[in-house]
Length: 201
Image: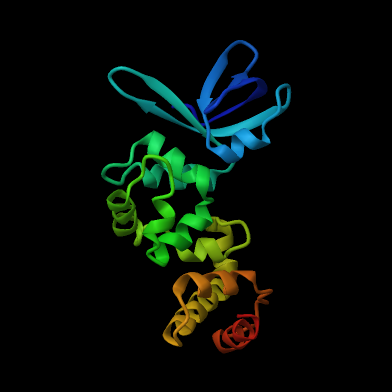
């Protein structure tokens, strides 16, 4: 219903911001990284999700479309509501969550307020096939349809390199992080990426 809100920050609260859009002010619940970057009087554009319940209608806002998309995935997990999803995205970025899910790091996810160990395991179980590691390996964490064709080769080779490192005995989380940190050119093959990664581990 409301794709994004663009306006001036009127006020900042513990878990939300009030955005003045000229003729109307929107109370928008946001993760910690948004609160930390907000300054009263600044212009802000937030990509939003409208949560409708019997007793309330709440807007949740994010600085990037990737954060919004990951938020939408999180609330599909049994036991994770909008506030729980927001708590997770307050303690970790979308890419951090991708790494945690890929490496089955339930302990890290359960650090979010209100998210226990069992719920964290559900997040891993239900999202492991939905969170794309290739998105984490891309420069901005989001591969559009337009750019996927031009980045599929390097991204695919990077993903293969991660799998090779895991087969060599390194943890998936460590492998993901080191491959993502590399300066990979378009003409590099999987073997080249693995060799470079081994020098940096």
